Image (cartoon, rainbow, N blue to C red; front, top):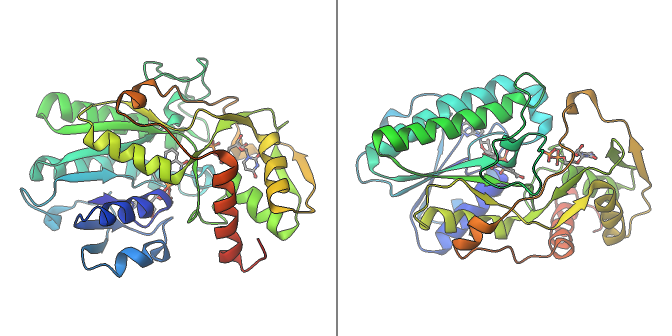
Length: 315
Ligand code: NAD
Ligand code: UDP
């Protein structure tokens, strides 16, 4: 079962599981996901789609032995969503996680929780190791997401310790690739759509903040390595190739051949608390036999081509 199946990462994961020959149930309420992401999966008889909000009880979804693996990726993930649907994000991280853990317990399934580098907040430890407990503002504009994921990690750990549920927590770092919504507000979707349209590239703040971008195929391989690796985690899954946002803007302009100007604009108010630096330590993931393989410029070329096709613009 993949919860969040119609989303960006979830839909790629469904495709990979189906390619392995698995039978897959995709669950999604389509709050930020799109059925179009599942076009290939929906054509496969081994795939079933269930439109359902996991924050509501999931009584009849499965019984003992029905499901071996539950991938819990359900959650809006763009900072733009933090400003518009914070209550839904917190319901999904709390009640949604509880319902999926109950389902895992009922079925005897192993549950993977897709947590996030956001649990480290604006980190004082760099690169971020899994033993670092984070620097999160519990009432800031990002707190609905950060604290929901931290609660989801705590709940998953409690189910594991007190009820013997088989679980693994992964912490996903910035991931990109085809099928992101061009208007989802995240940095690469913004930059690529702006470059393709010839609009100014909006670099927030001074552009010296850093992120480390993982291509979606690598992310899915990391998710599967963690699910199948027997570990409880948490395990960081991300690409440690760290770049400044200003460098990223110029790279997108170069790769698209765009005439767009790079415009450094003030950090929007709802982005307060924007982490200054982010880079995963992936020693633990390495011990599972996983390492990212896709270089940033190669992944960007694939995402640029997909975005151009979706927007009907020359890429
Ligand atoms: P996404 O928004 O494309 O996918 C999330 C999916 O979950 C969507 O299809 C959405 O409709 C669904 N969903 C949300 N709430 C739901 C609910 N209550 N019930 C059922 N479905 C629900 O985002 P994504 O980038 O694919 O992220 C997938 C997961 O990975 C999320 O849990 C996110 O927190 C985590 N993550 C992603 C990144 C990243 O860079 N993409 C980074 C860190 C963590
Ligand atoms: N960002 C930017 N311009 C944009 C969108 C984002 O400069 O149009 C910056 C944002 O301030 C942050 C980084 O890019 O420093 C990554 O933002 P994103 O929303 O992709 O995810 P985050 O890592 O903040 O969750």
